[in-house]
Length: 487
Picture 1 (spheres, rainbow, N blue to C red):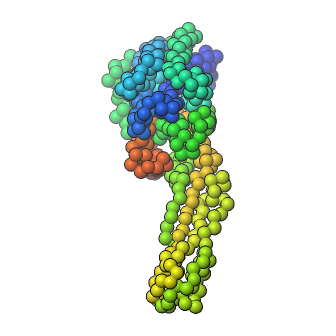
Picture 2 (picture 1 turned 90 degrees about the horizontal axis):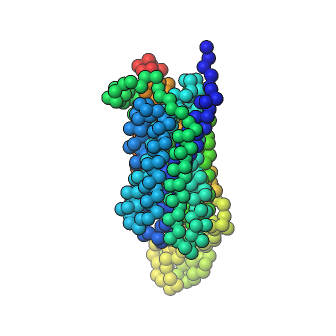
Picture 3 (picture 1 turned 90 degrees about the vertical axis):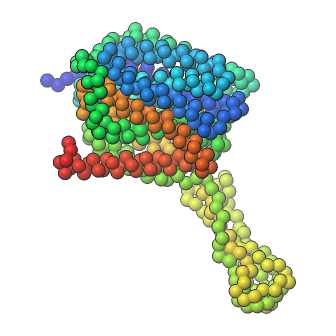
């Protein structure tokens, strides 16, 4: 008999998704708040310090996903989810009082516990839905990722409103207080309108629940999730300072444009779950890795102006320079035509460039009356290559890679109940830990790469190699499945 989805399951999924949206929005707070504080010179933090502040909440959410996944399998999602939100509200509230980098880092570690809500929600959602619908249900639950978009979209405007456009800058402290209040309220609502349910096999010891972690498949899924979720989290925060520094956007506009990455990626996660139910998660993920590799490569190239030696002019005879104009050099009676500098209109900042463009010209290296010898350089060639990295094209590519990662997030978590139906909490928690670590180390790696290279696009170089690694490992796995070596 075909299992159906009950009205109670739908109600639980609604509150599960709502709570996850709130938690994810709080989890991503530092991406907006830290950028605002640095942009308004409230704190003088370096790119590396900013990277640590962006990554610290993600670290907490990552390392606590496994224990909270285990607790959810053991005690049920209603109690664990409510307690998690209540505990997280405390350091979020205390953040409003800090003036120290160390305390800011400490309280960020505390409210980062909201990131563990994902493991709780996955386990709690899975027990309410039959296997046939788990991919779709988890995809719907994953829409809660749009909490990141909500913070980047409305957070800057709220901060501008609270501080009177920066005139009363200390009123930024109201923002974490507001978030703490919302977390507390959501905890109460969740406890009142949901009911508890645990997996059928919930009498195992913790050490027995950890048994699936010996399977290499768990760690492979973790790497996949490191890319599609961890890097999504990292860029949900990193894009705001990226747009501020690379494209000189106003703070509010940078938040709005950054949300164009996180919002669609969050919504399309549901489609990733549905496609995985219909066509299988492996096919979906393979396409995601191909797209991520290509787009990562395209996003590597920075805005730049390169100057290189070009084609010069060599004297064909001995003689004296008798004339120099903007268009020619004359040695004795021999005239050499120069290519003058002509600025193309589309090389200006206001132009719309898709591909790099070049301009070439020549400048004299001799003066009037100089004696020159045969084969002497009398005019040097200069080549200027300009790549605008047009912001509209950049935003479009970032949107595409976000959509790809959104599909991938839904696909990865279809694998878990498929291969580990009775240990979704521990396996989902482990995969979530590894994925969350991507969100933690991502901004830190980006900060160090920026310090090392001076290029903001160095972050996309990391994405390119990570995507390529996932693609190669999946192809190796597919080859082994086709040869019958593994199932």
